[in-house]
Image 1 (spheres, one colour):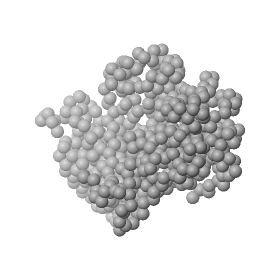
Image 2 (cartoon, helix red, strand yellow):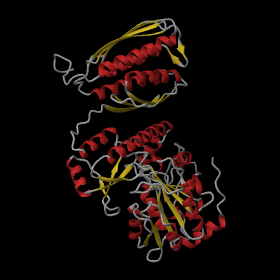
Image 3 (cartoon, rainbow, N blue to C red):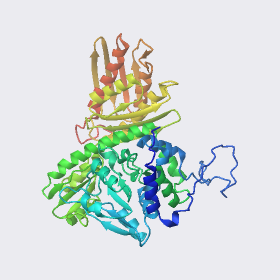
Image 4 (cartoon, one colour):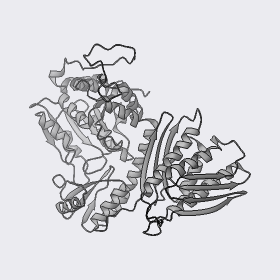
Length: 554
């Protein structure tokens, strides 16, 4: 566990005594830790003794105010101690709690740096708290530190990366400002978009500057906007104060369960992959948008959105709405600007086509599938017409090497993240990966119009030779002829070659024939995978606008 600061105790306590809302001084935070003993009879909170209709989970019980499982996971992800974390209903509640706790209505004030996230101002106005606005400098869209230093308010809200600008506030500037305000104010750094940048988090400053509070969210990079979970990170004494304003049981039990699953080790690998893809799409969009004649400026972005200065923002918003595409007009906060969220490859392709007045039909054959059983957790993403690198990680080294052969020689962008009970046997993981890969291929091919359908190839690798034939015909059939001398190559069981390709054939609904001969087991298996990849590449190639069947259907 990371060592916590010994709060610059006297200074932080002195600050909190000064800015804590007086009505909260003697308030004790509501907290309840459920005893997890399944044999315990819970008759203390007037809950129903039966489960809700249609549910297998025990949602008849109140959840923990601060779920221990999530505190542990967030502590690992953000590298802070558990008592430095407060979990809320989205980042908006985090903002509201800070205002509720440290700003007294019609007496205190908070400071913002516009253009910025609207919620800081909205939360304050609702509470009757004055808002002081020191706008960002338009020369570089950075805070005006000289003017901010002269302001006397209890709380300062800084957004980094900024919304809607998308830029980073240098950590050294935040540090200097926090030092100046150490005895005066809480410095809130909203890092909702930090995962899309390479910048270091302001959480690293909390040890030396305990008046810094950092806001995190699961709504952006972690794709859990509908679950509504936010994280506040700060000195433990500040967290204790915020708990005074927190409602009992703020997090619904189903949301806790979803987050627990989403932030598993495999889930974190998935998010790393998706964030990397989104950043690549952001860079592509930035270049393409800059080429459009009506775009005057593309703001540099460290987020999952791009801000554009354009000739006529209203007209562009209206034009895209006709194509059923929604973007944000930010002209009220930044003159003549629109904000576009970065979508996936298909969405971005359609967006650019609409902006260029081109045919908006997307030809991207992309599918992602996931499979969770008691034995395996697997995610597969295929893009049939994309040669990007992708990522393979199954925990079985030789299997990863073979899947890399499919990716390389088929021309398919392939992402496979898998975790299974390989400590028991590799069978489940390899077979289930084949099942999911076959399902992805089938979905990506859709109605199969235009594909070549049939393909055959023969390949050699030293003394080994493989012949593979495929017919993507909606008739599942698999034959395998050949022998693999060794029982295992690395940790990969040789008999799983049959099961892997059998699973693909059945789930792709294809006829697949494999024959092989050779002496070296490594060569035999590798030449099979390479030959399959080349044959698959030929079969899925778009060569016409016709369905390759006299029946008219497949």
